[in-house]
Length: 240
Image: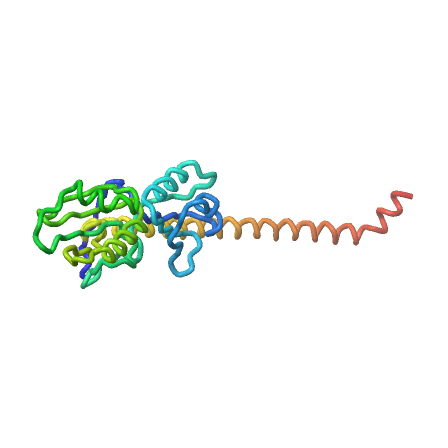
């Protein structure tokens, strides 16, 4: 799928299940702040331990972790983004392996599906975030937790002996929304890398200057020691 060019992409601060953390000293630094929350996966890019993508199952846990980041004792920066599984592709097929929480339920007999009926059928698998109508015989059901969506998908299909219902996973965010998150993530990572590079240059210059000063000090100390050695006999006579 061709990537849309957007020089200035602005997205609302809409929460997602994936949080990107930048400006870390190492990956272990942030671990205490999410270790008590169920996490699907943690990964980085090219073994860069200064940035970390954390994928949560439950949207509410992602939001809780994001809130915790506002009180971190170190200057790490969090943003909401999409995971590597949500990058738009040519086919852009959504399935149970993408950590999505939205399923589309269709009545194949073309009978009307009510919101109440769908909510009753799905709420036993986990808390529902929203039920949205698509057509009169179709409803989108979005859970807070992707594991609830997966459980509903499996169990309803198993119990659907009449085969009058069809269930499939759909993306939580549209293609455009996902590209917006990706473009925003690119800008953040680019800015982080540029700042990191600048800081490295400043650090190297500082170290170089300190080494130069140390060398000068050592040189002066060396000269002073030579002077002491040369004058040691005279100094001993003066002390007697």
